[in-house]
Length: 191
Image (cartoon, rainbow, N blue to C red; front, side, top):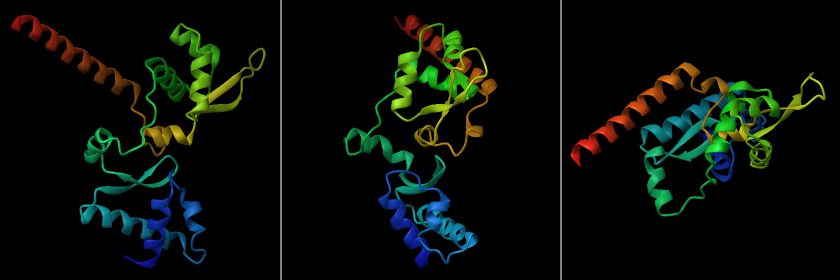
């Protein structure tokens, strides 16, 4: 591994968050963008080819060294990793609405969900998953919300275009409903 790749590895290992490429470039002012990308590619290949338990991931607007998914469950079971607090179903639903409809105001989210979402929006904002991205031109100029880089990082996305399309979600949800129904019917038949 070349010295630039080693320098990037050290910085990425020490960082608790994804580091954007432009920040990584400040580590070696003489490195060209092509050399920086080549070093990142070398580091990624090193982890992949040599069978390491970690991988270099491009997510949340930057690069990060993460545990491979196949080891996550064992580490969590042993309580060795700091787990982010789980999101409630209401928070997940609200976050999904914001992610797919952004920029979106509180009134529109409440119209879709059918309940007050003020406290949920506040909670998501405190966790850094959403933020105010502007104001609507509507009466009273209400705040508009959108997702943040922390949202991308938490869901391991490079950009919002990686979110499943809504038609893909409908198919996946229908398949899950059919599986659940088959389990219920199978359990009833076994009784």
